[in-house]
Length: 106
Image 1 (cartoon, rainbow, N blue to C red):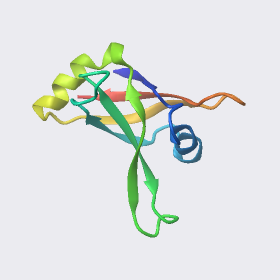
Image 2: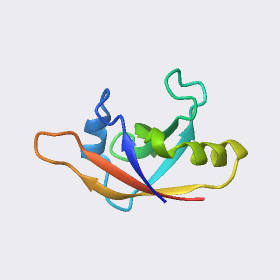
Image 3: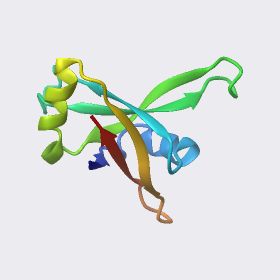
């Protein structure tokens, strides 16, 4: 199922997306049940090379699954079920924030 990633415009997330995101990139989904604004929050993390890749990867938050689609996914993650996700659409309009959509397989 497809999901839009929201919250890309906070902190350095847009820079991370511009520098490291690409169509087909795998992403990690992490539940954040203690999020004060969204109890069903699901964060989206992108792998980013540490020190030009010499020291492996660091998973950096690029945003969250849109709240309109995170309730079912939050239940799946809370059960500990296996979930895979990858970037399906990545677009950076000139002078605007990046837009990212991901596909999630449960």
